[in-house]
Amino acid sequence: MTVEDVENVLKAIEKSFNIGRVDRHHYINYKAIVLLGAFTEQRPLATIARLTVEQFEEAVKMRKPVIEILPWQDKIRMQHYCPLHPQVVEAMLPVLDGRDDDKLVFEQLSFREWLKYINIRLLHGGAHIVNGDLRKFCEQQSDILQWDQSNKNYILTHSVRGADWSFCKSPRAEPVYDIYMQYWAPVSFES
Image (cartoon, rainbow, N blue to C red; front, side):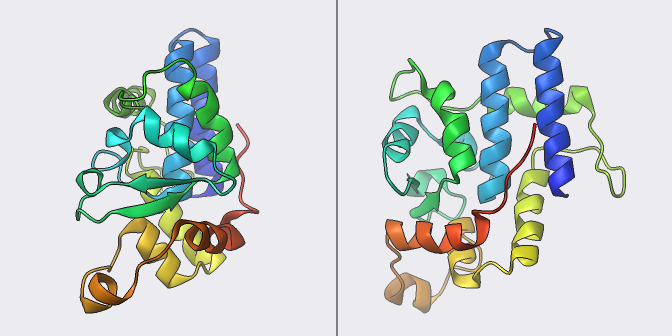
């Protein structure tokens, strides 16, 4: 999964909106799902589908925006901070407009079905793009960026079991954001 593949998904969302296959609500929602997934590798159903309007409203007001992922919103039940890239913040603002705080933000199952219907193919290998491919993009891009392993593992909740993480490490929101942005700030997508 490459930057171009992510951009192809964003272009397909734009095209579906322009020809009337998706309404404005789904258009802005799907774009935000793609950007959040590509920039943060959060799990589509275990995490992204469970995030609330209130969590994002709090995050986008911050100078260094992070979402606090609650234990029930994470596959391994680990509470952690997830930084929001500026492009994600920009995409989230229209999604949040006028919504009740306690509502779930994303139309995750609808997006999954839309992806099946549209049938976008990966540029390398030709496989049909599915929701989980955004996680693969972030993982692959993190290798290219040489993203700090500790910061990456914490945000993605990969390899964070054991005494070191349970008793010694307790990252704070601002340093998590700062380290993340050292690597991800130059990355952006065109749609």
